[in-house]
Image (cartoon, rainbow, N blue to C red; front, side):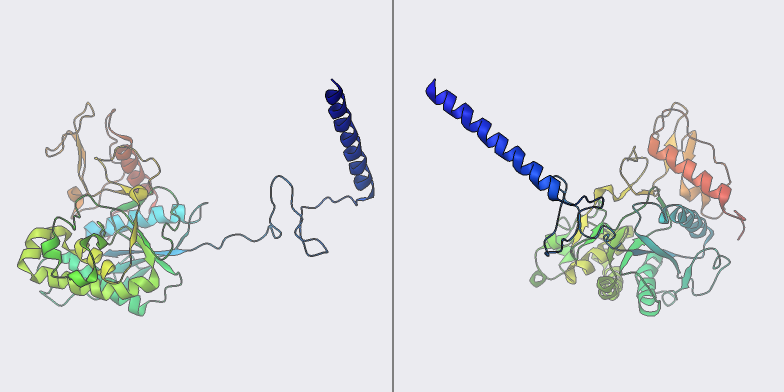
Length: 360
């Protein structure tokens, strides 16, 4: 018991001493109503629980990127670009956005009627016959011209496509010298290693250095893209001339060419699966930034997908390859996934608000 009494007395004595010390300090300390900041003795005064920065006005600088979309002057590409640019403008200034400028890279070789509506750079197409009927080969050549001649203020580029709809503000997803890219399940470098080694020799590293990506959507440093683009163009042309590569890669040949060019220049990519969705296979928007409506969406009136068979209700961009989509497209029947419903609603909102919709 004696030890217990001694310990209790010691605690009481220390507590009284501590309280007395705090009273003396408080009585002599000046009152401050401002946030903690640098003290006169050079030390940083901080809140004991939440550390406050000395200069609260300083914020991380935005890393703006420039959005670039390649396009022909066809009705098909033009209506998609107008819708894409409409939604770009809706999200550019919203919180979380690091979206800077926008350019439609028009590879028809001549201005069209939408130069005042959409910021546009006119690029020359490939010489007649060089694309061998594969018009997508004009894309890397158009980027080469734009990067050489345009005054691009931002340090990063987002390569996008006409059939992309931005559903929320996009931050700069790239970091540490890496690009940010969407991984495509059908880009399989390992499967086609024997073909790709013609363009990516073994001394350049393992085939896994080639990322399963295309050129879009990709956010990449401007200086890196300036190096990649000419290589991308040359490899695209070389692949098209190679019968084996042309047969194996088909309509995604230019995507493989970009992935190879990026690897040759040592530019790796963060594979960002949340970059976009592709209806009807992706059913929910979730945290995605872009809807890519490359696939047709066909449903019966009970909301069941009838892919491969024209549905009672359908939305397919190819239905409008030579004509403008009408305003106020019918909405899908009940039971159709959120991604498809959102897509049609966003197309309708854009066409309702874009001036002179349907005019060439």
